[in-house]
Length: 554
Image (cartoon, rainbow, N blue to C red; front, top):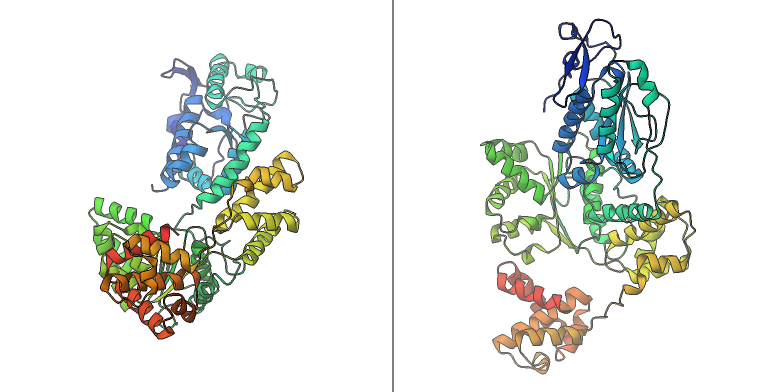
């Protein structure tokens, strides 16, 4: 939507009540207007009148314009949660616009996450003027059609729609005699209940776990300095730092592929690389986007019959392409074709390519081999689950950032219970911090166990070579004894090689230990098995599916 000045000349009622005409709107409300208002345009430098210069219909019109602009710039789920039926324009002063929201939680979310969007919407609807934005909760201050100061109480169950209705009644009764408006002011004062406070705690936790971000803006808070490095991710961090210091064909890794289970820091590393490149190479054009949004963007260009512009955008105007969750392109043939050509263009030009996924390239179903091959052209790194020391370090750093004091016993208890997801680890502290703030309580071990439900976490099973052999033999219906025997039939050899491959991948067992377990073979036999399975995974979709199924049972 192009920026334009709001046509105040069509909507403003001047404060001076002389030379007025009276009209009726669609709701039967009597409205006063200056007889010459339509012929007196407001200059660009003229101050915006206070809200007594607006009728209810005009405020509604402006409110609708602001909401429409917000809706087009904010994710639908977030708009419906925080704005739709929970947010409304209340008053316009000379240099201030006042909004009303339903709860303190919504106010905090809007101020923390959407103030910039709100400012843009105001400039779009009201013109290029910077207003102070004030947000009240359930009309904590005086609410009238004009600028008044007296207060009185209303029911705590009133909501935004009740407020508009009440405001209409005030306006209808007093629009002719504006002096009487001061005698009809009111406020709404809702104090949050305990249930409201608990809901806000859960909402902060859920918002953190969703991990949503706007792909057009690199998150400046995600840097290498606040990423905890441990044995499980040190190779990924070292590679990401190398890319940030020297991106593209002149660097070591012009193509980098990071994969792991959800919540182990892939997106944080993507943003850290982007921030590092921005700092050191500000002239480079960076595109950080999710595969899903890449798909949506391409669809929009196709709808506009302008796919050539989409192709040019990525192949000619991007120096660093970073796509999060590349596995989301599975079974999307049209998008895969475009991605294939974009990848080739950028790679041949020496641009930097970085991808993340929850699977290794060879293990992604629904993606053609030519794309899997290209994703493996660069460095492919698997990020493992963090060990107990790393988890404790993550918790300590997050607690420091939240200004939250927790004893070592509590930190150890959390780290021992939550083992596989860094985002969930951090989310547990966000929940504790929010609960402590809203309930004004110190945190002890019993509270932690109850609030985080630590007793529900079961101890992770320790996987052994015997477990891998049993699950593999069951999958292929071959006795475990045959896997350890000298038998060399095609079926037994294949199952044995897969079991060796998984033993190395999952348990990081040495080649000597694997060879000894599977019939006393030497390490060269194990190396042969590992290389053979790794090579076959690049071309054999059925083999990839078998290995994924075996892993899921471990």
